[in-house]
Image (cartoon, rainbow, N blue to C red):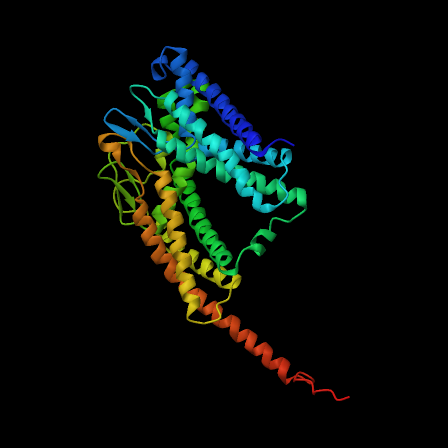
Length: 406
């Protein structure tokens, strides 16, 4: 068995190295396929571009002349996340971790070195034109390694000890468990709506997306990379669709809006998946049906919140239902902040949904519906139990047994 912190450092280094190797391969392929001016003529600049791509995969923003770039592909987080999860499982197999509470220490053992590596790479990736944020690199590297690496350690420990994953919920206190279940169900419903909206919109304008791809004429390798980039940005588009369903919508540049109240966009970059955006004018009529989804999500979240932990006092049920809406709003605000951000200077300085608007309106819509359904579900729950108790009392022998004498 290796010492915990030594094994954690090795796990962090191997995860960072493998991720960097994958992105370096893709960057070199793009350098070969594209005009060298896009990456630079020197191989060293190509390698530095790979380091910058690694940082982008951790949602580390960077500054450019005249502005910042913070709208980064959420899909790229999957690569370091999977590598860290795998490293966490290997760490649990190689170290002596007798109790589940040691998961915290194991996650720290991976996250600390990984954050140091991320900060170092942020310094290496600095150029005159591109300036990655070292502070974001440290924070993002630590958070991702702690979450994904800790999850890997926990899953491996549960498997080694023969403990079912569902028992983790049983170990949680009733109220946090109920809020977690309600929040996940409500947020998942909203994200599923975003998937449907984006998928239907792209399918309806697939011809325009194909025509844009032909106009770009990327070639075989370039076409594969273009498709990969769009797949990596697909989670961002799903969050944009979620913001549309909630109500505030999103922008694709300063002074633009795509929302149920109407669509106003100007000239757009030549990018195939942007064909999914609706035309200027009133919003598509069918898309307005999505405005009912936040209330349906709140209804589901309220019922599950009550079912996981029924409120003893009836007045408390709507309160906890509304709290479920607030936590859902916080989750959606965080997703909106991660999915959007500036894409440069001037017009592209504002792209994506407003995190505070999405969070506030989601909390109100989901919270209102969750409060009502939680109150109704809680009332029915205790009414049913009272009825069952009355039936047992009325049944023969259902009363209290007489005291026995001897």
